[in-house]
Length: 386
Image (cartoon, rainbow, N blue to C red; front, side, top):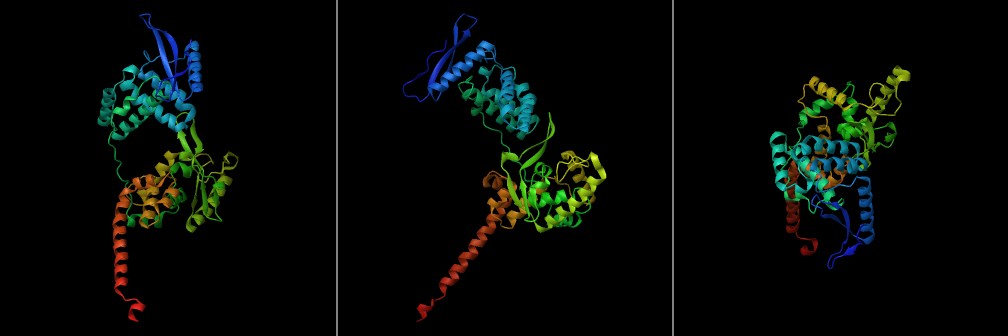
């Protein structure tokens, strides 16, 4: 039987105990639950009793780290997160966390175990992989501490994250970009490349665009969804990253290019006939369905090779868009809005290599302004001449 919820003097939380069985030595085993209110503790006690009755309760003393992580990703992450988030976390757990930590009892997991795993990942894989693994493990163990109350503390808190500093993206210089703009015509994805450069949209957002998202008369593009590839469901359409839609103003030249692109697409639809999948996509495959990111990558690589340009990633078109906006002195808040960043701090961190140069320009501009002030202060006012 569960105990009645109680409070301890000097503490804000409520507590309650549930007997969960006996140890091999015949001693009673009791789990203590906590919550902000008496009602919350009672609900947790009832839920635990139900799990004990159905055999689904987790027993910390025999639960391995691998079993816990598997159950957490399936019962907590899968129902509540986006498909790609679930797949990425499940992959990290399967490939890295379970091989290194899986056999260790959850209650016996130590900071030294985590440090050794991270060191091995940095040595054999990369600092980014190690950082991602630490992040997923920390999130999982936080749930074990706060929600399922299987642990008194999160051992990952005692392990410093690996140092990871992403290198600035490789971009074309002004002459190379000028060459690309002059010759980006007649290729299958020429308009896709132009829209990527002119708007800074992510590739998945570009491939998720519908004609209904474009108001050519007012030069507005509504970014609402993305087309992503999943391991289990193939290509699916989901809300944009962070589920934050946005509107992006188009250049007049981009509007003209989109009108021409629609006419070409209408002709392609007529040629395909009944096999065309009418999904209203701006950048579909040859039969109207979702365009694959692999196809975009391959055609992009072939295009810039034909143009004699150094290789850069398709995603670098997004970086070029942001870089030139910042160099032109556009306020970082506007740049962040166009890119779909949650806040300006993200933009400033990613493009710190650009903003450092802007600091020099700001200092020079301030000096010129102060020089003008000083020069004006030396001129006598009309009243002083009277």
